Image 1 (cartoon, rainbow, N blue to C red):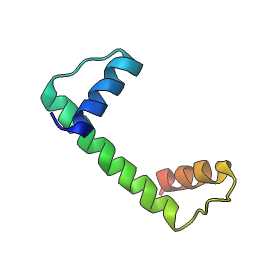
Image 2: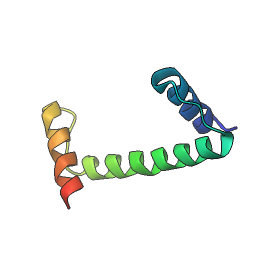
Image 3: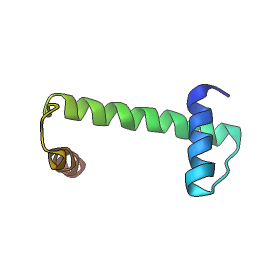
Image 4: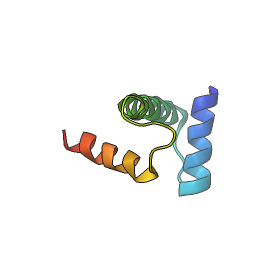
Length: 66
């Protein structure tokens, strides 16, 4: 089990009280990586460090609708 899969397992068990088999945990880790990359790419061209935190939520809401 790689580090990302171990992290997914820890979050699922520790925060959600859920347990999955190793195959599903690897799938979840891969899905989270794709989503994280998409969020980061969507935000990087539109946000700066000094932006209001609400700007991030606004961008994500706009992206979800498109």
